[in-house]
Length: 209
Image (tube, rainbow, N blue to C red; front, side, top):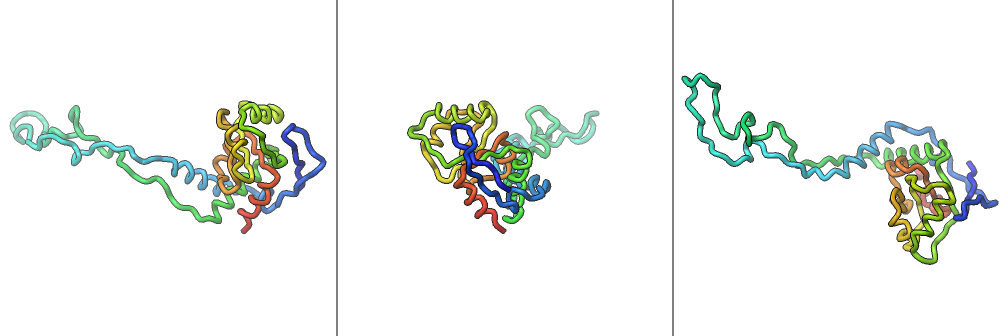
């Protein structure tokens, strides 16, 4: 499919780019997207939560009173979860939430996410650009021209242009990445996906079967 290329002034140029239908025009696989997003979010979890169960709690092991004859229930330890300051029953312990997915499935998920953006008309191709200096106003003006001020925006650039990256740092809800760093969650989380012309080739190369 052919898509118009825009300049950073917000106007369409006479040129167009042809997007690979096997990457930007597939029938999206929702289950692949679900698994990839689930893995991404799981990998963000620290898993350092910890509570003290009975074996980890300090306290006397003395039996509180004799087994029978008191008229009360049996009490074997002051560390019982039934008492104030006692142990936690089946509390959270440190663990690793991450899990593995096949590379082909992750590729399918990213292609599905990109295809959704194209179908919903939430993908814009920009000419390769750079800023003369790192100024927040430069990036802010760019967003204003595309009516993206205050909206979640993901910009994909070919290489790490410091002036572009630094110009975006003070703006909320904006993220700048390179093609190799694209992931399904951030593609779907963004309201609008901006991709520079040079990045298209790299994305297509990274997602060939």
